[in-house]
Length: 264
Image (cartoon, rainbow, N blue to C red; front, side):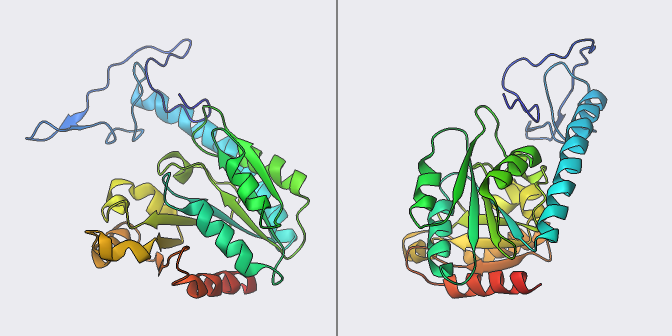
């Protein structure tokens, strides 16, 4: 169970709450759709209206903290980017390669989110870039308070670039504002071209989609054009950069995008 946002496995109870069974919508094939109610989600024993009230309260508090982060970053001219993806997309490898290519050009720092271990933060620090590991335990995403605490410890330099590598998850990080300038969705070609349709909230929230591991395309049954079209069905303005952190293909375009955002 995520102790922050309430997405749960098993029984979830709240004191004083009257249990109201939620009936999912079904189509002629018998498929069950739990995301079509008032709250857009489902928890056992909680009415849709109560679930919406809980979610609104949690997100309102987070949004206030996120706005404080955003004002701080803007005041220090810090470009903060929230990197989101599913596990195994190559997000950390892409980030380490990006940091190596930016060395000597811009000061950078990283907030590294995972449920456990400091493995990824150690990989980042090996590039010479300061990083703070944030382990969320049962939590499935970073929140604005976590980023605030980590940024304070990093002692960020003015006119720097802050990468926030979120917990590998294409669901909850879409809802939690961290105070970032943009969300950057990383999708590898090994994951399937239908991911933007399966997880539309994430790709709708992202400014840019990085299609990673394109060096593997000759070995996969992956339709690049279909994937991009799917992403633009849920977000018509999303920018798309195809690249490979391993071969280096497309990395110059990604760095040019970063330079453009820094100038903005």
